[in-house]
Image (cartoon, rainbow, N blue to C red; front, side):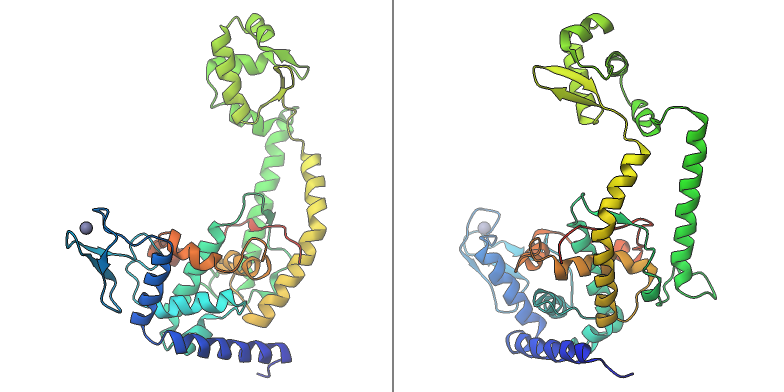
Length: 351
Ligand SMILES: [Zn+2]
């Protein structure tokens, strides 16, 4: 396979960055030293007894308190806890933080580790980054991404092309939408989602909500209509507000929130669509440059990687390395069984 100029340029940069990393971190013990130093800088090294005067042998995973002689494993609570390939994990972060995305096979060759281990390291990274995604991220179905889905996964239907995974998802999404439309045909109200929420309301909350028309009411008005004491009305309002069912207006008046209509959702979607199209084209180019093709199963994690590499307002230098120190590792089961959701997510950011 011939490589494009961009691919060759990336390859050279990765090798150069690897050599720089390798000069500093040659072994897993060196990697533990780096992590220890980082934690120390963050004032996170200390014994449970309160003593910060500790003794640690170079390359060790633990330190010993000079006062009570207790031994503490300092990787506990970080992603590195219980992990063996610390150097490769650190190396993957080193490359990512220099904006050099690597594939599992690249990581496996560079760090002389098995392909499975390398794949796991990158899955872990993807899951961690994905967890940091703001709730405002845009939802997408994966339509338009068929061209880059050509890796098999455990989710790929037998004897079919990997893109069949995406086709199955679209079919499922279409069926869900169709059945939702079908069920809302029966009722002439478009408050399906609101009704669903109402099921979890207390009797007081239901009475208050019923009393609230779309013209505003004061707590006193509501007390009269519902025949509830002011305390009960106020407390019901707090919960209804949390459930996003009522709006508080100036002057202590309340109004019932208009249900979100399908049409306003559609227009919001259309507004995002243009921004999204630009991002998706960039994402396809990113995949073509870095890993050629992906599986539908891992698509969300690649979207996360893409977001990480481009949104430098969110992902400032050092943020990824800090994420590893501040979070426990996703469980091996969660990593092994990871499957991208039907509706994928990508935060809006400017390229
Ligand atoms: Zn101690």
